[in-house]
Amino acid sequence: MAKKITLRQMGGSIGATIPKEIAERFHLNKGDEVFVSETDKGILITPYDPNFDKAMAVYEKGAKKYRNALRELSE
Image 1: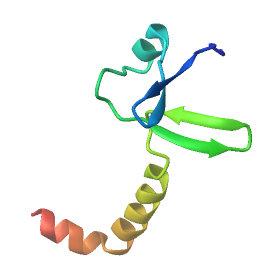
Image 2: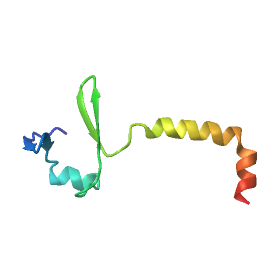
Image 3: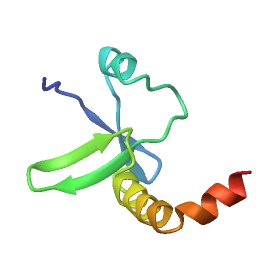
Image 4: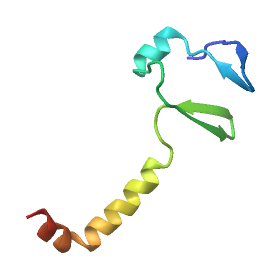
């Protein structure tokens, strides 16, 4: 679903207003942080951290390698 929005000057930056329906669907509120990424198709604005998958992969690798040590630490 594409929505047309107007960009506005906000200090030294340009801001976009997220329509109420979209903000409600993604549980976005005033003060929340979103991530902006440049893609092949344009700009992606998402509430999800694009680096989260990489961080989880590193965690899973470490958790698997050191599972015995982590088990001992949890006791």
